[in-house]
Image (cartoon, rainbow, N blue to C red; front, top):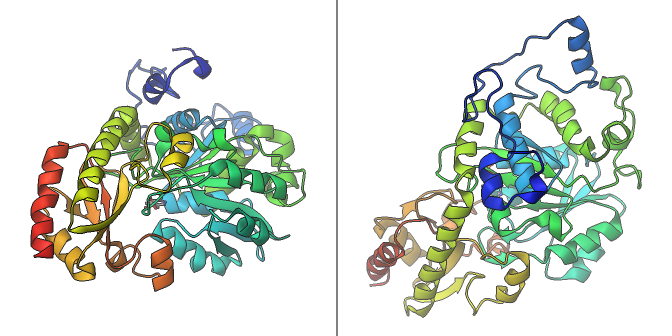
Amino acid sequence: MSDDTESYGFDTLQIHAGARPDPATGARQTPIYQSTAYVFRDADHAAALFNLQEVGFIYSRLTNPTVAVLQERIATLEGGVGAVCCSSGHAAQIMALFPLMQPGCNVIASTRLYGGTVTQFSQTIKRFGWEAKFVDFDDLDAVKAAVDDNTRAIFGEAIANPGGYIMDVRAIADIADAAQVPLIIDNTSATPYLCRPIEHGATLVVHSTTKYLTGNGTVTGGCVVDSGTFDWAASGKFPSLSEPEPAYHGLKFAETFGPLAFTFHGIAVGLRDLGMTMNPQGAHYTLMGIETLSLRMERHIENAVKVAEWLEKDDRIDAVTYAGLKSSPYFERGKSVCPRGAGALFTVAVKGGYEACVKLVDSLEIFSHVANLGDTRSLIIHSASTTHRQLTAEQQEAAGAAPNVVRLSIGIEDADDLIRDLDQALSKATS
Ligand SMILES: *Cc1c(COP(=O)(O)O)cnc(C)c1O
């Protein structure tokens, strides 16, 4: 396959992008380069690598050939110029913010985010002197009003986990552009098969590769993709990228690496010093998963629509928040943001509240009660007693994780079996 990725379709790229037959052995599948270090050709080669004058492999905290293939694969699928993989989705979020933020700076974040991200942003990042301002992203005036001189990024999820919310990525990107700050999109729930945020104006895309990209619940991982379109030097707000870097003899990333500045900084400073590295075994599992991403997503969506439509008509259910349902306030927006479907993750409000939800999760036979999503298996969780437990009642409500709500991640089993399982468990839960 040639390197001209423009001309290939998604199904071809999910299998081939970034990979070549192994130059040493001809191995067709990407080998797992289980090596910590790489031999330098000579002392000059070593010096050039350490000075970032030549690209190559030094030490696997920074770069590894197996991980590099995955980085190129995800960057290509997202339409970015480069990507940095790391140890988890949460690591990716820190890796994305780290070059942008300084003590006293803030990120504007959607109120509709994965519960773990709400906790990371509202509690943990404070210890770095960073602040998150949570705003309803459907209120564009409120988003604009929240931006101040210390804002360094805007952060949201294309399809929000778990509330069935779809973000108007283009409208928020316009606000970010006007403020001269990057828009970061967590594209975990959508995947690049359903939504390519860069095409809607996003600067950076973050992933928990733990979920649909790997797809079978085997490894945790994360990724930060750069669009390569942001001018880091224009506003003076991003000195880590535009000003001399003391640890590299005063090298300026934006000037030296142009559109790849963010990616090089992510490896040369982010991974070097934060050390949130993805291991080659993990990258291998994720590469295996990505090969079938489009096929899985098609079935995830087909099943999610069938199950959500069945649940919506059932009188033991109060509400189903799935943007793939015509009744959803986000159905129309979904057609432009994620035209192939609204994902396979939604919440269901069960009559009988907290008690009924707990009985439901305990009565299901095919669905597993786990804190994960995006598996081939169907999964369920009662967010209020688990993933969103640390949140206040208002935060739970805003995130679509009220006490009477369960979150479903619809797998790729037979939809009829999933419906039968829900039917029997709902009978037990609401009797
Ligand atoms: C799971 C998840 C994360 C965190 O990813 P980890 O790999 O668990 O660290 C972030 N955002 C979303 C939308 C997620 O679903």
